[in-house]
Structures are given as structure tokens and as C-alpha cells.
Length: 238
Figure 1 (cartoon, rainbow, N blue to C red):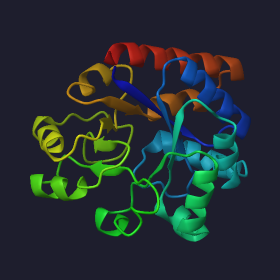
Figure 2: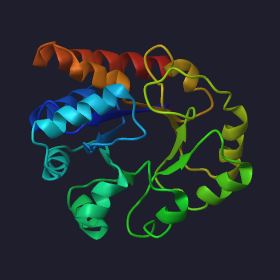
Figure 3: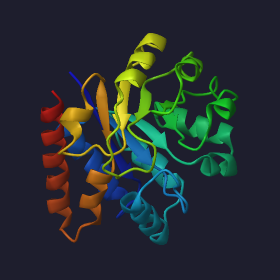
């Protein structure tokens, strides 16, 4: 059974919605949650997630909110996604201690290069990123201590774009280097999920869910649309 990872921007529109959305997504078949820390300059994200980040910050987001959300959730794995500035500013060891207390499974830090990530790898699980441009040798280096799952970036660029790249060779190199589950992200939505899920163990979906959060729909309608989208994608990839 291929897995579905859902990204949500924490506390947009508020923390209670984030909790309710996660519980609803869990019921709809989502296997893991990528819980995003709102940041003013999310360089790896496209316009949709950037907007949600900005609105969450304008609404008064505090770092405490991510831990309050994770504390309220059980029965689904949560991974904290954020840019390294958040971890550095608050203190990496503090973030690790809080994550352990609140049952967070790992960190996803897209702007932390492998060469810098190795200094933190023993403190808490860090998700390894692989890009289509990485050589076979670099993939072997990056994945020598891969933990939890591997995040394969579907194309060079930012989230939410509809780009296509032939990933056959890079997937083969990843499989040779590690037995860790391989998930693909960037540009995964209801239309592309089935194709992108080929030869990998799961997909990571962000912008498609956040578009629902940004809509003018009512609270209950947003929750239902999140569930419907999750169910549709989960069915399509399996």
C-alpha cells in the first residue's frame, strides 16, 4: 500500500482548524503529516504555500502552536517541516527536546544541505532530500544514514509547479543506495499523483491541500474537501 503524506501550514486559519484538518485527513487515509512552520521566506515553496505562510504569520502564529497541534494528535506520524532559520533561532537542541515531548517523528528542513545536516543527524531523525540533478555518487553519500523516509524532489524548482522530469535513473540510484521508503513531492496533486507514484512508496502533497485552506469556503466545507481530495489521491496511487 503506497502512502500519502499531507502538508499543512500550521495555524492557518487557526490552530484548531489545523487539528481538525489532521484528524479528518487521517480518517480519509492520509498516513503521515508534514506540519509546516510558517516562515517569512519559504524559498522552496510556491505562491500557494507562501501565501498561507504569510497569512498564518499575520494571524499571530507562534512556534508554540506547532507543538500544541502535535500534542492534540495521536495515531498518525507527524513530521515538522521548517526552514533552518526557525531551528537555529530557537536553538536546535530546544527543538529536538520539544519534538520528543510532543511525539514528532522527524524534521524536514529543505534549506539544510547534507554537508551541514550531518552535524545534527544523530540528535533527531532528519529526512534526506534527493534531487533529480544529484549524481549516483552523491545519492549514495546523502542516503548512507537515511532515516524514516527519503524525500525525492520531483523537479528542480519550487512546490506547486507542474513540471515533468524523467526520474527513472535517479529512482534506480536511490533504490541501490538505501532500503528506506521513498516518497516523491513537488507538483503532486489529484491529476498527477498516479503517475508520480510509480516506482516509489508514496507521495507528498502540499499545494493542492493548501489551496483548499485558502478558499472562501466555510469551515466544514474545507474539511470535507480536504477529506475528498485525500481519499481521491490515496485511491489513485493504489
